[in-house]
Structures are given as structure tokens and as C-alpha cells.
Image (cartoon, rainbow, N blue to C red; front, side, top):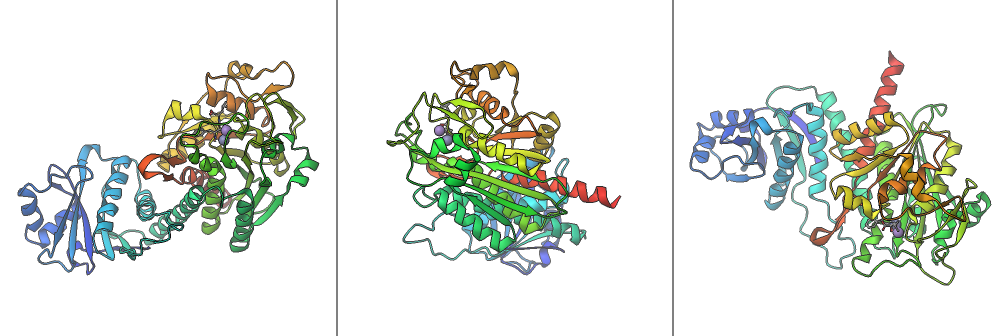
Length: 503
Ligand code: BES
Ligand code: MN
Ligand code: ZN
């Protein structure tokens, strides 16, 4: 799909489809008004017939509208004018592309980015339109023997305005949207791959390939390397599996190496059976998504490398399977982490924290500005926040606030949960420094308390994406979250830094 921006009169666009918005009840947007004038009231006359009220997400496709140069006009409902905010904008854009994808139109000009959205600039509307357009055509059908080879129809999308606008900033916003969307698509592809293909070795090979394509540095630690480093906790999870565990690092140096890097740590459990604390059979296939934290790190690094963002970012991905087996870790086993702290493993299904804690200790060597880990860590997070928001926990309130504002901007929601000492007490063990579980209560928080014991030396935040990384049911599939949140956060920092330098 190709994107461009232009300005002009909607009636004078030679293309397969022109899209304009209509508010409730039958209130024309500016572009729709212009079109209406040029067509001698054709649009308002049609609306009077009662075929469309302008309800949010409704659409009406018109053919051969007189006095226009386009084959079709698509009217998109925007809902109440006074309610039109970012959620409504994104929803209307989604409906636009769903409808366009049903038609035979190969190119479309959307007159939607000029419609005012509270607190959002035109650049936001451009970026989000691009992301939603690419999302609308995403499929994961590489492994179907008969792929739907109806060639993708919609190939060219133009974001149009009736007034002149600043093309340079418009183009930047377009590039940002494209990079973010491509990062999301990579994260989705990896998440959707079956666990017999997407193994730790597969992810390591991908890192090497990405490093070549985007001039990154990559290092793969093998099991013997991790043994030398004393990563007893990470390795305890891999014991039941025949697939060797890896610790992957991907380094993107977009500015002076003296500048402290932002470190992203992604949970890469390519399949989580629960280990000896075996999970029930129902929906266990979805535990192939237990590497979505890792996938979001790959996706975010791809996005920022594509944009050549002036910032230093390190991705660290501990990756393994969690399997039962003769050598598997047993409940009651005690292991020593790289930090020296000992852990009594009371439930082998609480494995995410066991691989993350060693990766978090390993991250110290990069002297990071901040560390953010991303993990499908707890079922409790799905109970608390459902599939709407990711859980956010941090040992630094400023960092949490910055991530929350990035999540708002990116329409990739997160919600701040507390990390108080009272919760940490649930991790006590009679035999080791800590247990790996803290009981049923506040499971998302106690999991983070566990991680916080390994992140005392730096500013750290944790994103629990158990409810947001994929969808179940008929539309089963990875969402690409939280690539938008992370990309937004890093972009904000990169632009802040470069403007600090200039001033
Ligand atoms: N990967 C799971 C968390 C998960 C479960 C994510 C369901 C999404 C849907 C994680 O490794 C896990 O099994 N966590 C346990 C922790 C418990 C044993 C303390 C859980 O949430 O049940
Ligand atoms: Mn588990
Ligand atoms: Zn898991």
C-alpha cells in the first residue's frame, strides 16, 4: 500500500474513490460541503432520502456522482459532532478502510484529516490513518496452502485536504505511521507463527537477519554462555525442553554512543505449557503468544531503525520454551539467579519472571537511561484490565507518567498499578531469598514485585501485556501491541533530546 498527501477540491480528484465525512444528523463536514456545492446538492439530496444519518461507523457508497471526476464517493458517518474525539476518529477510519476493501477501488482519496479532533494535530491524524490502513489489510495466511490470491485491491491511499497544509511535517507524520505499522506487522507475524516454527533458534536467526538489514549489532548468548554468567534462573526454565534457550541482544545506536541507551527487555517464551505445573488443555495453543513481549521488542526496533531515530536503544530477549520433561524444574527446586539472589520455584508456570530477572540483571552492563520490560506475564492482568489496557508498573513515577502519556498519544492504552512493599511481602520463602509466586491475590503486582527485586539499580518500568498482545476467538491473532506505545515513547525522547541540543 502506498501513501501520499495532497490538497485540492474533492470534486476534481480523478481516482477510484473519494471519501468524505458526515456528522449526525446529516451535518456535512467541510469537504463534504465542498463536494455538495460542486455537485449542486447531490450529496445533501441523497441524505435527505434517509439512507444515511451520519451515525459513527456507518457508510454509504455512491457511484457516478455527477460533476465529479471520481468513480465512487464514500460517505463515512462520524457520529455527533460534539463527541468527535480520537477514539471516534480512529473508529471512522477503520470503517472507511473496511468498506474500501470491500469495493474494487484500487486508489482512494480520503478527505478526513482536516476534520477537527479535540487535542489532536493533523500529524496525529495522518499517522493514525496510515497505521489503521495497514492494519485493515493485515492477514496471517502464509501457512495456508491455498492463499487468498485475490490481489489486494486498494493500493494507493491519498490523505487529502481542501486547504493547503505543510507538506514537510505531513510527510514526517506519514513516515512515522508507516514505520510504526511495519513494526506492528512484524510483531504480529512473529506472534502468529506456530510454536514449532517460532522457536528460540528462529528468533535468534531473525535477529541476525535484522542486524544485517538495518545495521544493528546483535549478540546471541548460548546456554553455555549463560551458564558462565550464572543465569541459573533463566536456565531452570529451559531444562525441560529440547530446544536450546538463547539470550538475544539487538543494539541500535542512533546517536553518540556516550548517550545512555534505552533498554527494552521482552519475554520470549515461544511456548508455555506451564512445565511440571502443567496448564489445562483448553486453549493451550494460545501460549504460542507467550513470546509477544519479545515480538514487540523486535517490532519497535524495526520501527525506530526504519525511521533512523536519533536515540540509542538496546533490545534484550531471553527466549526459551517452558516444557515438562525428565529434566524439567520441579516445584520446590531452588535456583540461584545471576544477581546472586536465590529463588524457590513453587510453580513452574510462573516462568516469565524467572527468565526476565536474569535478563534484567544482564541489562545493567549497558548503564541504561531506563529499562522497560514487556511481558505476557500474568493471567491476573487479564482479569484486572481485560483486553483494553496493558498493566504498567514502575519504580519511578516520572517514567510511569511518560509511558502513560505515550500510550494515550499512541491509542495503545496502559493503566498504572501500584508497586507497594505490602505486596512484596507475599513473596516470602522459608528456604530461599524469595518464592517465585505470591499467591492468588494481586497476581500482576506480586509478579512485578518479584521483578523489582532485580531492578534496584536503575529506573525501570514493566508492561504486562497478557490481555492486550493478542485476541482470542474467531478473530484470533496478535495485535502488534505495545509497539505503538513504545515507538511513541522513544520518539518523544528522541525529539526532546535533539531539540535540547539545538537550543
Ligand atoms: N504466560 C502466562 C501468563 C498468561 C496466562 C498470559 C494466560 C495470558 C493468558 C504466565 O507464564 C503464567 O502462566 N502465569 C501464571 C502465574 C501464576 C502461576 C502465579 C498465571 O498467570 O496463571
Ligand atoms: Mn507460565
Ligand atoms: Zn508464560
